[in-house]
Structures are given as structure tokens and as C-alpha cells.
Image (cartoon, rainbow, N blue to C red; front, side, top):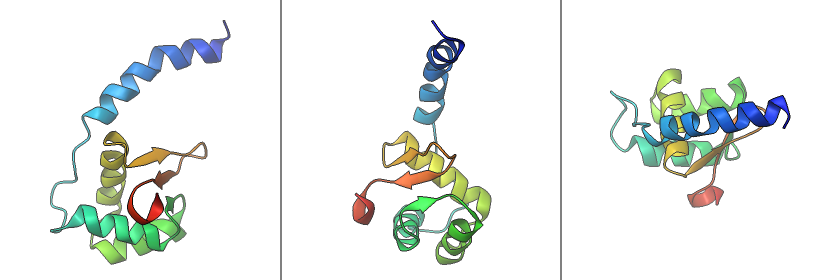
Length: 96
């Protein structure tokens, strides 16, 4: 068994449990979840760089931290997936 496989098996349950406990960001504006979906769809359904995050922040009225927390919340609910490059892809609504 390779070292990579060992780490994958050891940490997968921890990541799953953490994602399952994700909560929407505190202090986010009303309708933050729906606004987030619309904003992420407007930038191509992926959050990777400043070029993606800034418009989402402006459209939703959320801070960067709140946008990151919402992305984690969406991943925990199966509405988004992590990308290999560290980004996040929304997989529901207009992005399905």
C-alpha cells in the first residue's frame, strides 16, 4: 500500500465528518444561500481565484470568510464539490 493511499484512508473519514457539520455563515444576509448560487453561477460555477471570489462577494454582500464558509456548507450538503486545484464547483441549479 502506498503512503498516499494510507493518508487517503486515514483522513477521508475526518474530512467527511467535518463537511457534514458545516453550517451556513453567521451574519450572512437574508437569502444568502440562493444569492450565493446565483453569484457563483454568474462567474462560471467555480470559485478558484480572486477573479471569482470578488464578484461573488459583491453580488451577495458577504465577506470573503462568509463566502468560504458558504462554499464549505454547500460541499457538506452535496451542492458543491472540491476541485483538485483547491477550488470549489457548484453542482446544483444553473450549475448542474
